Length: 236
Image 1 (cartoon, rainbow, N blue to C red):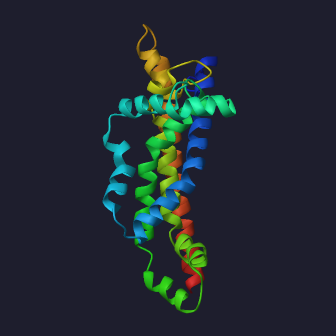
Image 2 (image 1 turned 90 degrees about the horizontal axis):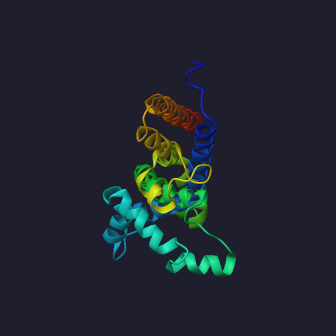
Image 3 (image 1 turned 90 degrees about the vertical axis):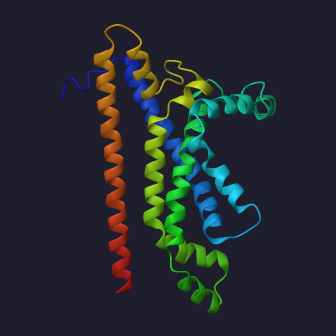
């Protein structure tokens, strides 16, 4: 156990930076994922299939391509990045905030998919009954649809967190591998495997990453079960 947590200062910084990036990416992406999942699950419109494909595109694109596109868009000379730098002094490329952006984009499809499936399993007759009684759409969404879809929302959030925790390709392309600034656990493991004698440190970080991911998945399962029991008690 002592061996497991015998981290160097750089590895310790990479661990805390990864947790910070994954948390920010999840919290910032979750509201957007819920909104997009609801639209895809409940609305039918021209271009629905295109929007669905666009949402899931990061799952099938090579992560390096996603990172390069982010660099073109949000780099200092990028279409959006140049404007953010000039008007707000916000720089995302080669910063930990840019790593959070890349991690959030890579996690977004997983979050939307889990939440969409949960919303689709909500009985629309309940929503219809509420509408018949005069409830406005926003009230139906907040008091019926989203509460009943909570297990899927929890699952999507945890899946997104786990994905952001292990993101590598898009992150290293967009923000590089700068110690203390953009070096995450995945990048640190990669760096250790490229130098002689780094296998032990790489193994240590790998075990820690596996442990954090397992804890996140167990927490997701526990929250889903707790929510299900609470809903069952309310229905009785």
